[in-house]
View 1 (cartoon, rainbow, N blue to C red):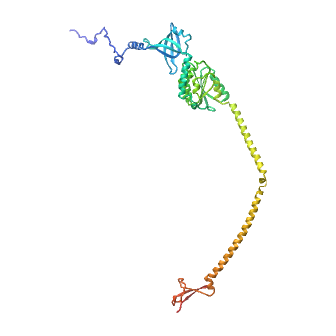
View 2 (view 1 turned 180 degrees about the vertical axis):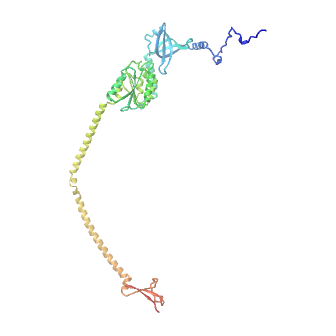
View 3 (view 1 turned 120 degrees about the horizontal axis):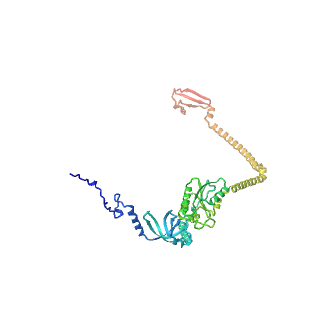
Length: 422
């Protein structure tokens, strides 16, 4: 009797075909697309996109055989794309395609399935001309001016003596030396917070913007200077970049623009609170001259002392002139007429008082005599008496008294008690 073979113990030498999902929406964790299947599909999709003209700044230019590889960068948003160009198209420009050159290329998206990378396959290339740059710069200038970013009422005065000066300058260059040397010579105690950045090329805008924001947030920095030496129009373009200009406008700390030479005028100059013609001028503008200030203080003190002396002398002369006048030389003379008048009035008032008192005394005497004449006491003095009952009633009629009534008899000097008899 034979042994039955388990179905799972058999080795199947033929692999069953696997059916992949037809669309991306049908994929799942259990039924995914392999990379070898997805990558060509991306390439097929991108191949249907049309060619496009795109502008940017050239970086990392390399040539290999009849192709030129480069990075096309957008300075405003810090984005970049890889691109290739035919060497013949690059040579037709007639200029070296160096880092920082602004170009416009006509390219079509290309997908490299093996590495899974996207790049722009360029067909044509043109350099952005000076006229185009100036036209775009003028349009940006008008737009920012319409927003009010250049208005004079937005600008604030620079501090008289800043505690700390924030300086944004090149990693290597004379701008830092010009600012620091001139400021220190004028005010030896000045302190600096220096941020060294790239001042041209693709990294200029993001590094300069970050440095300004960092210094603006520094609590001890009272003024910020953005300085760079001279250069070509293209070299100074980062300081007319919209993102950098808006970052400068947002600074709460007073900002000084010291870009290039006197003739250079990037948009940063228009938004800054103060525009210095050169880095040297910035060093002189942000810090007062200690020696000149000391001389000014000395002159002011001398002027104030002279003014006080003149005022004192003027008052002294006026006082002497006033004291020399007769009225002040013999001040009591002005009281003589009033003293005589006071004497006359005092004598007159004394006499009037004597008369008044005499008249009053005579009148009092007359009234006293009249009072004595009319007084009951006078009657009593002549021998008359006043009879009253105990309750004080005056007896005027003998019929009013009965026998035995007690009586009080008032005479001139004293009273007599008596009893009535029939």
